[in-house]
Image 1 (tube, one colour):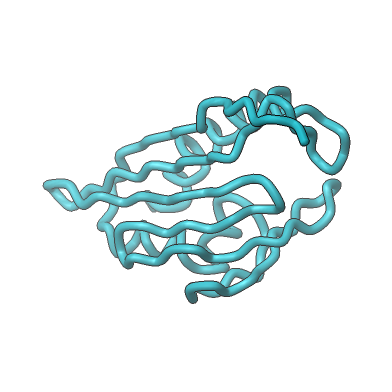
Image 2 (image 1 turned 180 degrees about the vertical axis):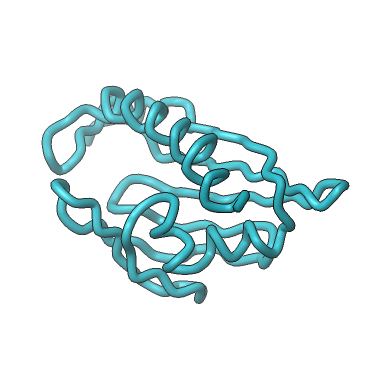
Length: 141
C-alpha cells in the first residue's frame, strides 16, 4: 500500500454583503448550491447521501458529515475529498465565508487517472472563481 503524501488543503475566503441566514441558504440548499456551483440533489441532513452532477465527469457521490446551522457544513465528495463551508457573522450584516477543500494526496490519482497534484491546481483556480465571483454574484443581489 502506498503511503500518503498530503498536499495542502484549498482555502478560499470572501466577505459577502449579506446576512449569515442568506449565505447559509445559498450554501446549504440544493437550489442555492446549484445557483453558484453545481447541479445536485443535496438535502441538509447528517449522513444524507447526495449527488453532484459534474457534467463531463459524471456524477459524484457525496455524504453530509457535519451540519452546524448557520456556521458550518461539511461533506465527503467522491472517494477522496472533503469540503467544509464555514460562515461567520460580521458587523454591518456581512458574512465571512470560507471554503476548505481537503483530502489531497500527491501519491493518488483520480478515477480518471489524473494525479491529485494536477487536479488540486485546477480546482484551486476553479474555487477562486466560484467563491470570489460566482457566490457573491448570486448572493449580493
